[in-house]
Length: 186
Picture 1 (cartoon, rainbow, N blue to C red):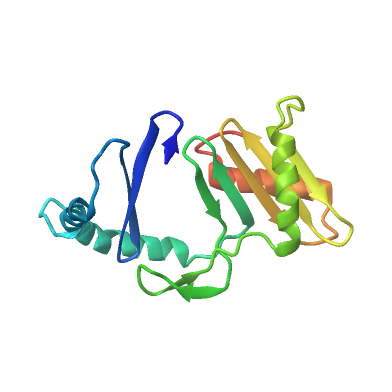
Picture 2 (picture 1 turned 30 degrees about the horizontal axis):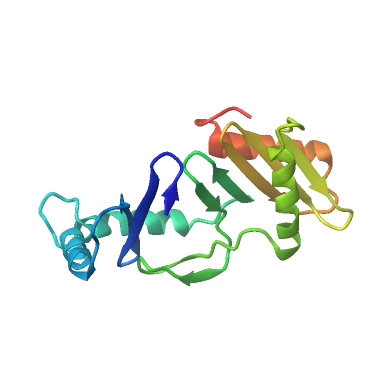
């Protein structure tokens, strides 16, 4: 793996009962099966300090389930360029969770909306255009709205072919205020 700020390294992903811990070692680190097995044992064995995956799992699993079982009011995609975090809205189809129980499935955009995301992203990413917001609508479907501010961007999918641009802008402002008012102003 190559990280922009840190250069090349070796990425190790350890999965324990649905929790993934990603560790990046220096490129020169000598990693073999014995080292990785001792790392796994150290990370998954209860240590008494509350920091092992075995001790964190009972704390994380209920919080994860509580968040993921609630359906989002809006369908959206959110991306943070500074930490590469991505979030898709929770939809109403259910699946089994790796952390236990069932949860809503992150279905993301509909198939006919996916093709629109790349051109909208490219428009906002083009430094010559200096565009921070794009809204797109076809006659037979609802709006797809894209907004970018600094390192964050979101794509909001609004159903309803009769929705006006004014209503679209109102819903975008409401969505941003619900989800991002403590982060940035749109």
